[in-house]
Image 1 (cartoon, rainbow, N blue to C red):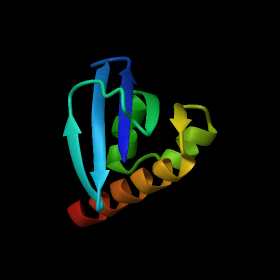
Image 2: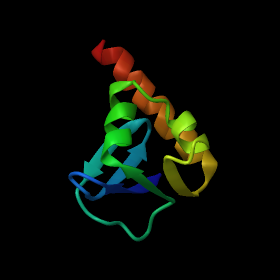
Image 3: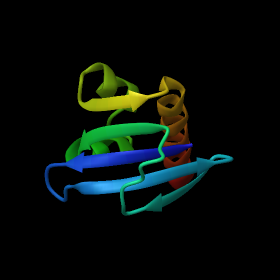
Amino acid sequence: MAVQINVTGEGAGELYIEINDYKIEIQPYQYYDRDALVTISSENLLNIISGKLEAKDAYHDGRIKYNGDAKILVVLNKIIKERIKKES
């Protein structure tokens, strides 16, 4: 899976995440042959990564704009949750 994330607000930019066998590779550039596109503020992204905000809640509240297969967002959320548990 290939997901481009456009970050808005402080530290704005874009990054590309490739997910393969639940392993993540992150690169700091646009990727046009992607499966999904996510637009999110830097504040909301940091809150999701830190576990303070659920990605699905942010999506339902309109804090994440998403274009692509919804299954990818579910997988990405699951991977983030697993990483948070490992770091705790």
